[in-house]
Image (cartoon, rainbow, N blue to C red; front, top):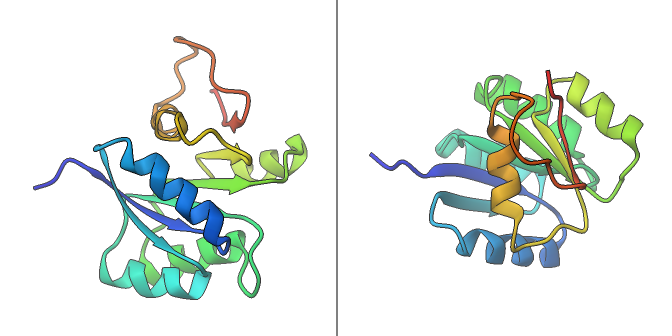
Length: 142
């Protein structure tokens, strides 16, 4: 049994997928599956349910929020952590996603050298201890 975290990354931007793939190639703790649309994400999640969803927010057709809702309802992923990646850096935008149950929001541009560390940090329970989180990682700290 693999101890790697199986990540489903959904982004319509080819360049972002390439950069994200590069970031994950630097860390052997993750198994990355990528796709370019919400529809493709639904197909892949049915075949191999991920441990983590990494979703772009702004995509044509089905945006990140709709993709998330459909993955939860159609693929049984309601308990799966979701991290949104978005160029929209407004606090209010991120707050609404977090209130709806997102684990974190990582703003673009992101540093591919630290992306996996940011994801690990986002997946940690909020304790109020430890180093400060990166400026582009937004999450609730209870």
